[in-house]
Length: 581
Image 1: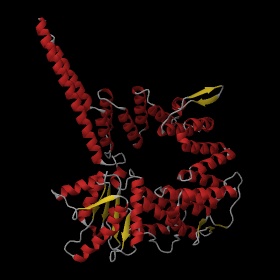
Image 2: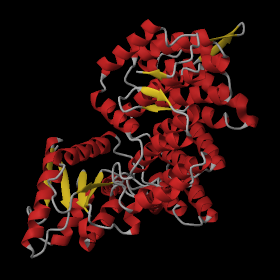
Image 3: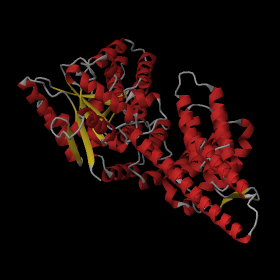
Image 4: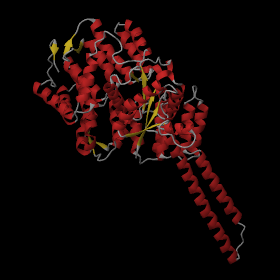
């Protein structure tokens, strides 16, 4: 299926110099990077279709897999079109702007790639690479919100058009089925009338049969009206209100559960909705009803295990459900699992239930069995085994499990984060920092890693030198100069109020309040890369280079080197003053 990229931008009007400038931007930073990623690129003034221009634009904005928008000159048409795109689609929108435009307040918080307004081709290769990386990041995490609409309404569908199309098709299918059933019943009724007339039997009961048919149709239509699909939509609308009406929510639930038809998918949607809204009572209610209605479903049993683990009154039930899903039996005080098949979510929910209950002893007992029986989940199981050994204080077993995890799955960021935690605990802070960099390079969209790197610089007084070796530093100002660029990177990755507040909290907590004003000014000026002077950008530069050259061979090479040096071991050897890793 053809992948489409739609370009929205100013066209330059009647001024030829502006036309030429924006055509250059289109060619260099929209057409070329998108085509390299396999997209067909459309721009309304170049590839206009018959019909209403406005209708065509709206179709493109709602249906294109990728949109690249140039916000230069604060063009009203572009702003309007961007708003339409953000309402319809959760992610996969990339923003450009020249460095001369002072963006309006509502746009400043977004991640915008800047180019030279006087000479768009300046630094061309660097900007093209930023666009390529932005496209790759959007494709890697297509369901990640890149706008305030979907951050605010986190339960909204990834693409509204796809959802509405499917919903319309589902309703049409149900209506068609009802019409077919009605036609069959009518034909059967007519045949029955003829047979009775032939035999000379009275037709008194015909009207009763007719009434029964009408009643069945009314019941079916009522069930459709209060169907699970309809209830899920109504509940989302109710929770989207600033002050949800809980009487209305109660009525929607009662009608759906007593008069409508709820599929497994409907129950699952309500469960996710209530979790997202922080409604534990409604979450447990829906799961309990779902488990009663679909007792063979392991999904709801595993979800219940995790939900019940959060309440001390239901902890025994949590273990009961987790054991049932994993087919665990207890013989002479020892647990045995007969589980041969389980999906990822079910397994994760059961493991999370044991972890919430601090039953690491159960994990240590059953995970080795599961590693043999459901080997397709080997990485998840090993990771939980590492955590269980750590919590139980069995360092030797933790190290062996961690070595296996890193050797078999060197390209997973979470695995490197586990190694970071272990090495940090063992006071191997420089090598720990290196693994945290690995985790961040493997998942550059995870801002938690960037905050952790900044925190290590403040807490452990280490950073990257100009030669990219990890070195010790002592003064608070040095720490600030090396840590703040990671906070800048975090804001460029996630332009949200939550992320901004985390940055400011970390700044204030470490006693460098003067950077808060500098930070705000940098955001107001468009968040240019390396846009705050006199900071130490060696760390973020190294991280970029590491991400560019990171592959499985390099990860295995580092792992083998660490094994030879005995870095990942039970022995703690504090690193020296300067270390190249």
